[in-house]
Length: 160
Image 1 (cartoon, rainbow, N blue to C red):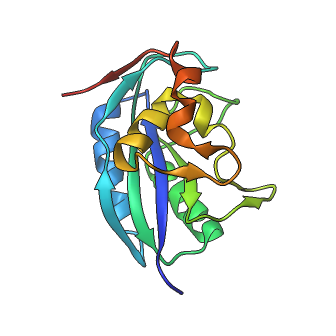
Image 2: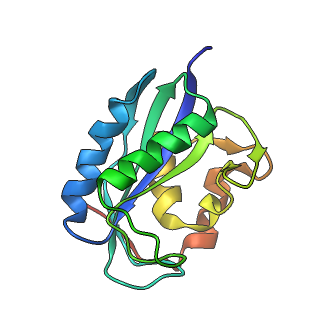
């Protein structure tokens, strides 16, 4: 299979989130059949539809030959190594890895929806994603840059 362009959102707000997100970039690069192409800046963001401390967020661009379901399983294994717990929806977390895009695939299964269904409504995903791929389009929503205004009220700070 040919490698596809993949985007993964990273976030953490428990423990040492800065160190965890930085480590996770390296773990993504080590996945089989996968190469880390680029990583966004890191951003400090207030929780959206959640509570707890601020998050550290970023986006990784990968080239991968893994199928979406295998990628999801690999991301969940990385989260588990960082003691990710899921006590309730949108709970604070040691690490959250979201599969945003796998090429231009659309998928809707009980385990995985591609593209990620809420990415265009969240500054913590949209800003780092557009940093890496400013002209990226969503198959149903069009140019992602056109959705920035919808996230304007969300607190986000690019870290040095």
